[in-house]
Length: 395
Ligand code: SF4
Image (cartoon, rainbow, N blue to C red; front, side):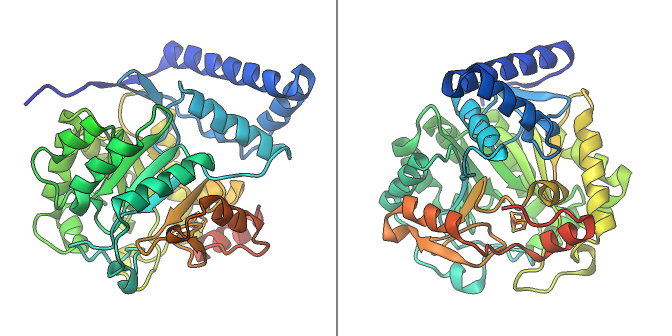
């Protein structure tokens, strides 16, 4: 077994210098595109917005294999791809462009051995015909042409098609594209992670909802779900992959000591990021600890994540999207889109309207239809938060 590729944190003056350099590079890029005067006005107007992306810049950044990351949903901050995302973000926030997805969640199978009650894949789509590697390659090419830089391979359990993923990465990897696999770890055989890393996967997002083994095993339905997830995280680090955790946060983790205990546990297993999702009812009923959050509970989770990220002490960065989206607007179809296991292209896994199917072949048309929808759906949680906060739907 070879030694793990080290991941470190950029903090203090190093982080400050990096951030200043980033703004200078962005400003230069905007000046080249729009001229000095308009670029200055746009940047200033952007800076004044409460909902600007850079307002959530954490107190430490993740360094991995020569790149600097703030969040797994965007390209590394040191890349031209990130500057392009920011240029588009500034343009759309200041009325000089239309928001377009930079991230795509692409389902490659509906199959999964687990039975999580909050799963966003319904019974019909679990049986859907899987897209071939050729179709996935064409889909990724179409999405990349439309401006997507980051791809999350999802399911079902994508590890059940690990060999296909290695082949797909071999055809799709480009310097400006970044690929992640969402997994519980089930179905990954020895050597898969090393082969995926060798083929160009950036990282894995491992589903682990708690440091409470019994809770994870109960929710996933099995005796070994927690151990499998923990083992996958360790092996992924040894293979040189970045590790993020995707956690559907149950009520017990809203208690401060429990939340930070969880963050510490997954940090010890190799995670650099923790994506914290509030529970959402799908087509199964949820146990009481996973019933949808109240506004106060959303606020608590948001506060816990903010406090975690404000610190410069090394450890995973934690994010939760709901309050942020209540201020900034639902991001489904704006900064990301979802391709479900049947190939239907939707704004978000929690929204049902499809704008086309990847088998129709024209991704640009599908995204165009999505952007032109005058009456886009939003989820119940978002509606509740925007009504309570008086922020309204921003599209
Ligand atoms: S539909 Fe809800 S979960 Fe999906 S992006 Fe919009 S606010 Fe977020």
